[in-house]
Every structure is written in C-alpha cells, then in structure tokens.
Amino acid sequence: MSEAAALPGQPRGGVLSGPATSRAVNVLAPNASPMTLDGTNTWIVAEPDSDLAVVIDPGPLDDTHLRAVIDTAERAGRRIALTLLTHGHPDHAEGAARFAELTRTKVRALDPALRLGDEGLTAGDVVTTGGLELRVVPTPGHTADSLSFHLPADRAVLTGDTILGRGTTVVAHPDGRLGDYLDSLRRLRSLTVDDGVHTVLPGHGPVLDDAQGAVEFYLAHRAHRLAQVETAVEAGHRTASEVVAQVYADVDRSLWPAAELSVLAQLEYLGEHGLI
Image 1 (cartoon, one colour):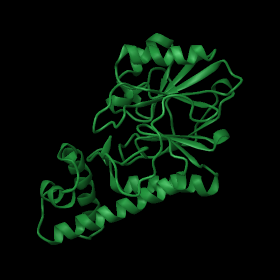
Image 2 (cartoon, rainbow, N blue to C red):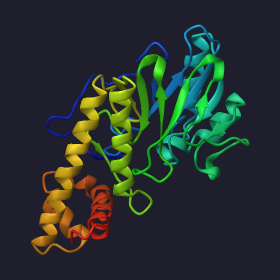
Image 3 (cartoon, rainbow, N blue to C red):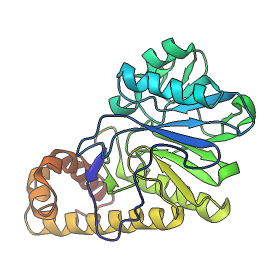
Image 4 (cartoon, rainbow, N blue to C red):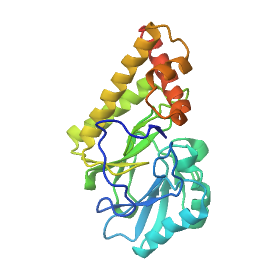
C-alpha cells in the first residue's frame, strides 16, 4: 500500500515480471492502482536445481493470476510446495486460500487467522523447502503482522509492503505503529550492513538493487515527514485531516486517505514521546 506514487530521490528501476535473482521470479498481479502501484508482486522462490518452489504473497482473489503463478512454476519444472504471506492485506493475501486449494499447499503466516495448516511463522524461523533457505525477519509497522524474508543465497530480502519499489509505504494506523516501523527499517538496514543484502524484492513496484540506499531513503523520509507533522501541529493544525492538507499538499488527493493513516500513526508517536 503506497502513500505516494513517487518521491524525488527515490531509488527506482524497471517494472519487473519475470526473473529477479537466480532464485526469485515475479508474477505481477493485474491489480494496479494508486495504492498498489503496478500491482502486487507474487514471488516464486526456489533453489536453481530444485523441483519444489515456495510462493510468497499469492495476491488478490483472481483465478487467472493464481493459475498464471502455477503455470510459471510448472514451465520451470517446479511444483509449488508451500505458500507464505508477508502480511494479511487483501492485495497480498486474499487469494491465499484459493491458491492453497489449487496447489494443495499449506499457508504459513504470522497471523493465525491467515494460516492453513498447523505451522505459523515467527522470528528466527528458517524455511528450507526444496533446499531453499528463507529466513523470517519480523518487520512490523506497516501492519502488526508484517514479515520480510531474507534470501541469503541471493543477498536479497523480500519486503512485502515494508519497503516498496517506488514511493513510500503507509503506516496503517491503528494496526501499524510508527515506532515499530522505524525499528523494522533499522533491522533491515542491519541486514544490508551485517549480512551483505543488496537487493530488495518488494511487494509492489520494481526491484531495488541498492538495498542500503533504499533503507536510508526510507529512514530519512520518515524523519522528514515526522518533522513536518510536528511543525504543522505547532502551527495549529490539530486533526489528522488538517495535517494531511498541510503536509501532503503536493500529493495526489486520491492518496490522502492513506496519508491520513500515516499521520495518525505519527501523531501517536509524537504524543508517546512527549513531542506534542
């Protein structure tokens, strides 16, 4: 879920539907919108020599898309053996139950309500289907149940909506919390510094080849927006809608409802830290 379609200085690349790394292939869902950018990126991840694949975020309930994901895996000689979710928003997870039915797979997620099968996902879990190594990284903030998946063999991280390929993401108040989100960005930054991650495979938008630059951009953007919100409140703009009109005046009005969620999260954060 994007808060803004594009921002100056945002890392960007070509919109991708196809191979992104040696282990990850994207099938783009046909649900483009101001909030989903070009559509939801459904990721098929597998070891190069394996006949088993893992799918991350089947996307919306669209049989044509779900079958396209299956067909893409089968053309590569692979069977989908497991479905994972980065979080529960419908553009990522609505099609999961139908996809599980089509593929006869289990669905693993942080939120028990989204799981199909006994196993969920928690911090420190490692998915090893077909010899793959996918490390579960908790990245709450966009939503409370947001996860990312570290793919060390490709020095990549699949970020769902925590980092997008274009623009910035919504902190979806009240489920999403800004303090959690900032901690998650710092956690992802540590992957780029300590674990050599250089590629972001996002839930929407193009692949980013400078993971550290993307994280630093997001942290700087959040700090800038937070300062703007604080200044707006000091100037007498008290409600979230008033702050949005002041701070997001240069953003398409169709995105203002999403921006209002982020402003509510920022106002909560500023209040908790005694800054307003």
